[in-house]
Length: 327
Image: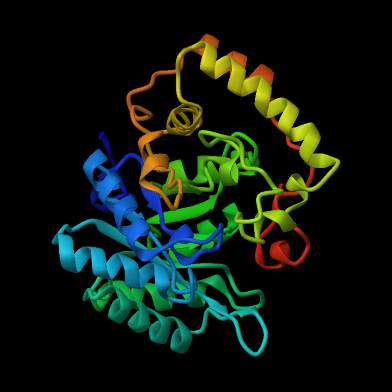
């Protein structure tokens, strides 16, 4: 697989990474053995950039990666995250004490002495980002992390943090049905030399081999609470998706590969991290880094899925409560 640089001064990683949220069971039941096969398939394809977090399965995702590292002896670049406190109530904590403690927990679960990238999972409202960047900068200087990143932030937060200590990556939702990062964030990352890492690049299963079915009893509850998957929004969205899928299949292409190729074409600093529970789904991404979409292809995709086409919000009100908004 082709390589891309993980931010200015960062290492080269595979142009497509692997999101490991599903290893914790968020999107349906799974087993550790299935997750290990998924990791093997990704590695065999050339994917060497893994993305996890302390709360993915409450440590289960990191533990599975640790087992894979121990038994396979591979050395991928690993990103993990911290900030969420889940009890007694869910909140965001960017304090130095919390981030340090959670990072130490992640390193222990992963069985490594350093992670290549450590994100704040969300920016804590009311805490100056300059303070947080200072904390993260010290972790870099101490060798605990190779670099730091931020997730679900606005361009102004990136500028302020980067001025204190260079940020390596920003991770926000971005796909053919979530286009907000085009309103300045993708561009600001390019200007500052920061990698932009789209999560949910396959729209939470919408652009998978088969379309995610909200009625599937083994699909997990998270997506079923998202307005875009709830009627009447879902029927309207599915009609658009099916037209796009028909066009892709007529070209003899894989829907997931085209969705990823569309993102890769947005800039050399863009590194999408699709997530899955299965090795079979990983195989659907083959060739995405080599797929060149012509100007005519991009125009047709824009006609089928124009900016703003998705009906309904990408989060419900509770899920969106910790996300920085901008326009």
